[in-house]
Image (cartoon, one colour):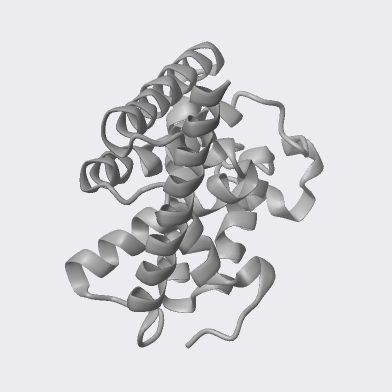
Length: 209
């Protein structure tokens, strides 16, 4: 049982995101698009100016692979996400962190190969494809607006980790700790029930007015 609270309460975060992704088809769609969207976002961010110019890196210059890997916004976000995921759960978090850095490294080398103009176009086009797929999943199957419309930061932070944990649970039966899935499933059902009741009340008010 988890005793973490607030920012690192995995049950709370997972239940919040899970309440918006309870339909199997929608979960599959997000599994296919969320991590590619992370890659596409980092690819797009590579077109932005780096935080530090290559010439300013000093002894770190030798670690940047001829300026392909840069200290930029994409790297900063990658570090933040990686640390956050490890704090949520060490085992799955380390795997998530490796995926984050793999996306950063892969997108950096692809961007360096494509050049600024193609990187920007490809990054934007890929994000549009990934976001369109996810929004369609909510509209066609979940019948509920995405989580980001209610809590943007929480949705962006939890999306990739939620997908990874779903895969680990479904394929390997992994749980961060014993009873995690049962506790989270209970919270998800409760939140969905609460949302449906609110929706019914809103529909009744609309009919009255």
